[in-house]
Image (cartoon, rainbow, N blue to C red):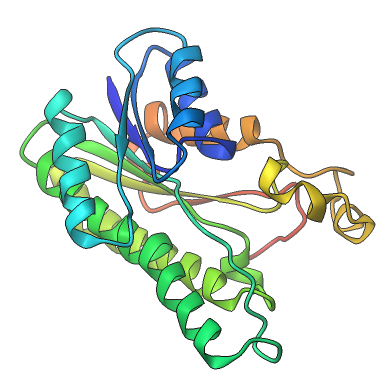
Length: 243
């Protein structure tokens, strides 16, 4: 089996690559700029047949090239939309130029980039025996992110987009799932999760690990039954519960 994982140079994406490789999957790892970290992760993966591809997901032409480059190496069975950015832009403390830049870049990478890549995947997979598209969202899609509203909006859009694709593609055997973490213990947010207020909000007394998120993503890629298509799976340690 061959799977494309975006944003795989570190953090959750690297953990997803490791989890899939441990189960015999050949992983095509996307990165934007940090080739060294992506290659270090690739070389440490179990199994063989792993590869790297580079693209700026904010560029629609680069997204199309990314898909064709990755799929040409071996027809892909699944796509994991993991790449995302989280720039702070609190509305009352951000000037208009920074505000508009944050919105444009965040939506371009987190939402429309994932949508364009999913479109490419869906078109290819429906001509084969089917496939799976798994997108990494966030609890911020439901609870809001006051310092990063574009991030929350992008993830809410990703949820709605994924469910739309689940409905559109199910008859062709292509299934769509969403995994929605809360805080995750990655290097990027190490300072934030050391805040006692963040820990106090965690019933587990800690935030999720990248490996825990990766375990759920791997389940969606490899094990989830077709009847789960359209599901959004929370991985936030009961820090935010929705009904």
